[in-house]
Each structure stands twice: as structure tokens, then as C-alpha cells.
Amino acid sequence: MASSREIKRRIRSVKNVGQITRAMEMVAASKMRRAQRNVLATRPYADSMRDLIGDLNSRVVGAARKGTLLEVKPDTGRVALIVVTPDRGLAGSLSSNVLRRVGRFIIEQQELGRTVDTYAYGKKGRDFLARSGQNLKAEAIRLGDTPKLDRILGVATAALSRVGSGEYSEVYLVYSEFVNTLVQRPQLKKLIPVEAPAESGSSRLDFTYEPDQEELLAELLPRYVETQIYQAILESIASFYSAQMVAMRNATKSAKDLARELTLSFNKARQAAITKEVSEISSGAAALSDG
Amino acid sequence: MPIHLKIVTAEREIFADDVDLVSAPTRDGRVGILPRHAPLLTILTSGELDIVKDGVRTPFAVSGGFMEVLPTKITILADTVERADEIDEARAQQAVRLAEEGRAAAQSERDMELAEAKLRKEMARLQVARLKEISRRQGR
Image (cartoon, rainbow over all chains, first blue to last red; front, top):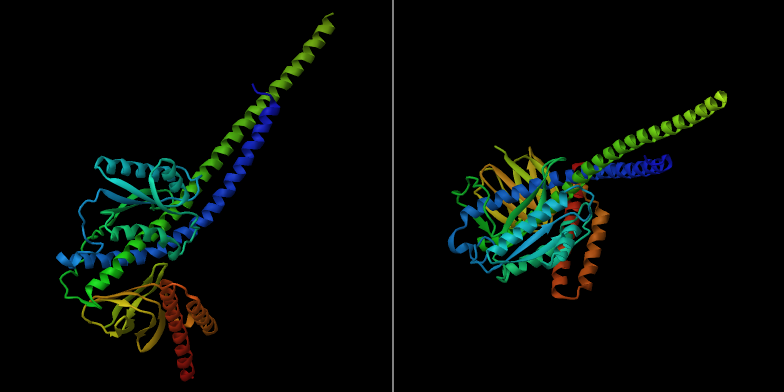
């Protein structure tokens, strides 16, 4: 059995760790509430945008799709992948779940004979892609807890411009979807060509477009894609704080359990030492009186 | 018969209610939408967005976006929207001045365009703030 001094030192360090994880849990919890509010607040815009695109997509047919982001282009053998991850770790398996999805996607695409160019939001994804030698074209890290839309547009624009120039036939987005505090799910979405969500039934209406359909699509579709990316980033932030809070709560609990166990063995060691001393004294005394 | 209006920006939902009239600045000029308007999809520009409900006019300043008009609902996807009574006139004036300086300092053509868009947006805000002031005085 370890010496009681050693056990004492371990108890102290475990308790310290427990205090830190507990503090991190509380910080994550308060930031989580804000991040969750942000996600929920932006969903109406993203949803309205999706409805609008759905309506539009079912009405725009044939040649009118040409040259827009709706157009399904012939395979160029090159696709883009936008990876959204948190900047920091200590959030359980959140980042690795997303990155595993990324790895699987790249392998699938390579089996189809395509090259994948990657774009990263967040440090975890950036590091992973750089380390594993992927073609990392652009990155944006340290976006903060409530990123503004214009802060995130740079990377998106870089990817979109290469769609415009015909370099990519498809663009995908990977992020961690925020379902609730306990569940975050890695999501892979095809951004371009823009795919119609379920039809909303207004497709037979005789629509007026102002100024005209072409100009509208040219404005609306990039905006739609940006919105999707922005939403993905907010979802990722909310996922991060939720996962971190849960991870830190578990860590705090483990630290507490461990401290309890160690205290128990410390007490046992102390008790053993006392018993030993007493029996030594009493046996010594017995030896004296016998003599 | 009112029509349902929803105004959302990328950051949050601003307004959702039944209204009687929407007057919005589009790229081709101002449009007024009454209930049972023909389906329309249009691009908004910066300017004043007015909503009338039960005879009460609520002005907003909008900086651009899209508007979809369907038989039963209107959806406005705005870049930024502010309720007129949330705009502080002095600060709006300050913002206009800053935007003018930004335009004067613009180097490239792209900078120029951005600065002008910003200036238009700030002017619209200021105008909406002033209109609100006027209507408040008349109300007295």
C-alpha cells in the first residue's frame, strides 16, 4: 500500500482538478445558454430561406437554371468540403465525431476518383486537415462565441468563387448539429448544387419576379448558401458548449469519486499504521512483563 | 382581411403578426402590398419599411434583403431591420458622417461600392428616425 503522504498528495491534486473542471462546467453552462439562444434565434431566417428556395427551385426549370447555383454540373473530379469545428477541445468526443465524418467523406470521394479541397472554420478542423495533409484552401479560426455574419463570409466566398469558375462541381458542408444539450450529431450537407427541400405547394402559383428571375437567383442563392454556413457555425458553437458542459460535469463527478476512494485508502493506511504501532507497543510491553 | 407578415434577419426574428398593409422599398421602386396581392418575389433595397395594422403605422428602417409575397403570407428576409423608435437620431447622424468619411477615403472601386452601400443604409436609418420625430410632433 502506498505511503499515506503520497496518497494525501494525490487527493489534493485530484481535488484541484475537480475544482477546475467544476469551474469550466459552470462557464460552459452559461455560454451554452447564450449559444443555444443564438441558434434558436437564427433558425427562423434559415427556415424561411429554405422554404423560399424550395418554392423557387420547383418553379425554375430548364434553361433558367443554367449558370446558377441550382445547376447540376458535370463531374469535374474536384469537390469542396467546408468543415466546421470548435476552436477548442475538452468537449468529449464532439470534434473527433465530426472529424471522423470528414475522414470518411474524403475516402468515399477518393474512391470515386475525386479530389477534395477543404475549407476550415475552427481550429480543431484546421489542425486535423493540415496534419493529415489535405488540400486546405482557406481557414477562419477564433470566430468567438457570437460571430457576425461578415466575419465568416471570407472563406465561404473563396469556395463559392471556385464554383463560379467551374472548378468544383459540388460543395459539401460538415458540422455538428445541435439537437439538444445531450445530443449533438455530425451532419454532412450538400450545399451546391442547391437541393430543393420538400415542395411547399405554391409551385403552381403565377409568380412575379422583380427585377427578374435571373437577377433574383443570382442574389438569392449565394445568400442562401451563406446562411446555411452561418447556421452551421452557430450550431457548432452551441454543440461545443453543450458537449463541454456535459464532459466537464462527468469529469467533476469522476474527480469526486476518485477523491472519495483515495480518502478511503488514506484512512485505511492511517488505521493500519496505528494498529501496527499499538501492537508493537503492546507486544513490547508483554515481552517486558513476561521477563 | 389581414395578411400575415414575418420579418426575419439572419440574427433573429423581428416581427410576426397580421397586418393590413406593407409598404416596402424594392430595387425598382416602392411597392405597397395589400392582402390578396399577386405572388411576388423581389429584392429590397435600403429605405423605409412601413407596416399598417388597424390604422396604426409602424415604420422600420431596412438595409436590404428579399420579400416573398404569397396569397396568405408575406416573408421579409432582411439584412438588417430596425424599428424606428429604436433608432437614436444623433447616433444615426454620426453614422452617416462616418459613412461619408469612409466613402471619401475609399481607394478601390470595391471599397467605393461598399462605402456607398453603407452610406445609403445609414441615410435610410436617419430618414426613418426623422420621420418618426415629425409624426410624433404632429400627433401632439
